[in-house]
Image 1: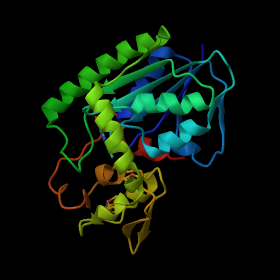
Image 2: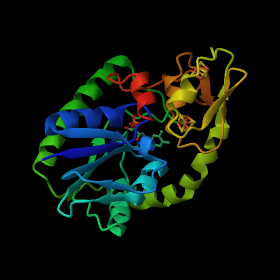
Image 3: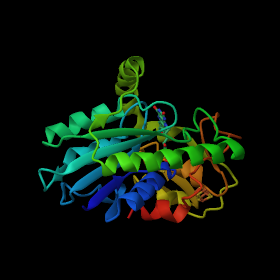
Length: 262
Ligand SMILES: Cc1cc2nc3c(=O)[nH]c(=O)nc-3n(C[C@H](O)[C@H](O)[C@H](O)COP(=O)(O)O)c2cc1C
Ligand code: SF4
Ligand code: SF4
């Protein structure tokens, strides 16, 4: 049974999850959602279709929303599932996805959540090394169990508690429209070496270099890839990220993220 896994990632959690699940399922193709942005429709021929993505503001990243709106399945019996990776609470992400897919005649049969290290450096720094190693090991074990459930084509929708869903939905609708312009908070320090990595990996093609320094075009997804992967840690968001430990999944490197944009 063949599977296509569509993934979106800023710091590698969702990509590593897709890789591990793909290895377990076998006969799996990984496709980056960022690479399909210019397609007007995506018709998937696979027998199993998965969407793996990070939770943003208790819901779906905008890029994942737009992708879900144009996804179609060629096989009416295809098993459709999702894995929302999150730091604290998946909120209403899978329910939002279910609603969008339903409009395309697709049923989200398995909606799963996976707790991973949080990457929202605007609020907190990455965990210290020892804690991180434990978190990654736990997430890896959970991913393997999740892959078994997917192999069994389990039908279930992981829900966060009522409060997280209701408040989360309210917060999501309030804040998501402001995210594309939230790059106005980014600024670059003199430690920038003009390497161009931030511009090359941005999934939204939202960064260009001018006089060797990044500039942002206000169509940001807030994935924080530019801030997290800058080798000089020269990008900050407002005043609060200064001195905070950066995060990316240890099994993923900057080239993996650059490739995810192609
Ligand atoms: C803009 C933004 C908003 C986030 N919002 C949430 C959230 O509401 N709940 C949560 O548990 N984690 C949240 N996170 C953390 C990510 O969902 C989590 O770290 C995810 O696994 C990152 O995946 P990635 O490495 O594939 O980008 C947020 C991260 C970002 C960048
Ligand atoms: S990745 Fe960092 S060092 Fe490289 S150009 Fe961007 S801001 Fe400058
Ligand atoms: S500008 Fe930075 S945070 Fe915004 S989409 Fe690009 S890489 Fe992500």
